[in-house]
Image (cartoon, rainbow, N blue to C red):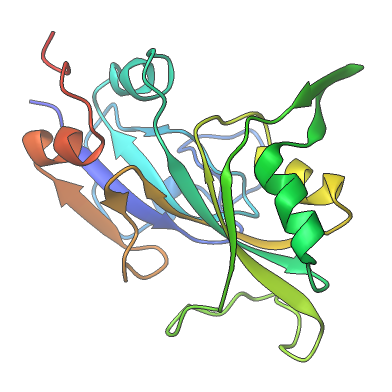
Length: 199
């Protein structure tokens, strides 16, 4: 019987249980994960938010390698005030480097300027609120390496905070950093809009 979890991955923690580097690991979370649990769609150590953990090895293929794209939404804080023209460029697609000497133009996506959500947990290295900044909500259907950070850098803004808030209907909600929520299999795949998980 497979098990399915959502974690609010804290800042400065890697999305794995084992590492040869001196880093904070998922095993430091206050939860007894079953053997064989692994992360799906990893977040780097500077990113926060929704991380899927499961014992089911099929989830990566079903979620990220199928013909049907799945939406991922990120709350992003960038330095500086973003103009309407720059926002439009992000929406239409911008060139980013995905490998040495390999440029890629991102697929058009949904981007909007938002207010900092009330109740958002503080970040240990977040700049003071009086420093000019913009909060964005970015929804993608693709996931190149460090794509969101590279996208905002391509339009001359530096990513200061990156929080994944949803994957399809699977929402981070008010889950505190470091907290774990377990889902029943049927609900987990329903929220991810995956119908063929028993095939």
